[in-house]
Length: 393
Image (spheres, rainbow, N blue to C red):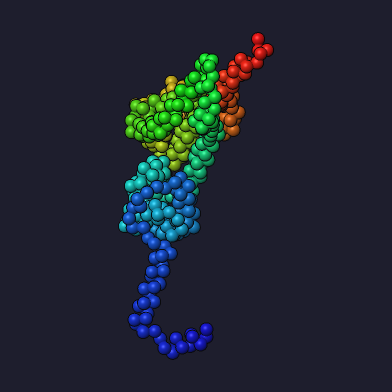
């Protein structure tokens, strides 16, 4: 090795060799981290990616790293094409003299109004790194709350799908194999057996068409929820009225409303603007319309507590009472944060007890489906053996 170094020292590389070496090094660098200059085809940033971006940026700014350099550093660490593209756009925009929230506003549909406005307030007040740290913590809480609700719904959905799957399997594959036995009976078959024969024949003949109709209805439902405002509003109203799940959804949306409002008010966002931002971040259209109405009432001098009291079906009595206390004492943000913590803990309790509360309903559903198939098969066999038994009388 030392010999090679000595030889290279005595005979320095020519310009052609050096140019080739630089070209190889450039290609290697591009392979390691290829910059994303065009918007990716599947452009999407998950909540985890957004949370990580905000958290890392807050840490780097707090450590004294310039914002452009911080964005480029996070870009190099990003594993997704969408993340590298967004970070590259943000770094370029800030380098050209724009505020971060102005560049970020182009991707408002991805980051949301809450994130954009929190960064805007931080830049205006000079506390961007503090706002980013606080924003990362709030996004994590939103993620944890959403995960609890989704996890609570996984079990009942799985049980329902499994029960329907077993019933279809018995009807389509198992029942047709013993159907010739029933057809050989001279006696009249029970109504449940005749119904099962009809359903089995229907699935065997038109199964593919039924499957296409079901898939089409799912796509139609998804399309209407996204594109038709009246239909989406109706679905959101129904979700809030479901006996067991409605209470959980209500607590979830109240927790999000109170926490978001509290954080924005603490960041010195004006109350009407904070209400409008909260309305935009709300996923349920019933609560969205309610908060937009609240913003209009406040413009005309109305009080939040009075409005919440009138909307008693959406907001429990404790919400209006605590907000009234906050308005009187001047500590509205603290009262809202207190309510957020209460309803987040309530969501936690409801999700833990959901499986216990919904289990009897699932058992009845499973019993009806599986019991219907079992009775339809066993009843004619029992009736036939009774006729064969000379002592059947």
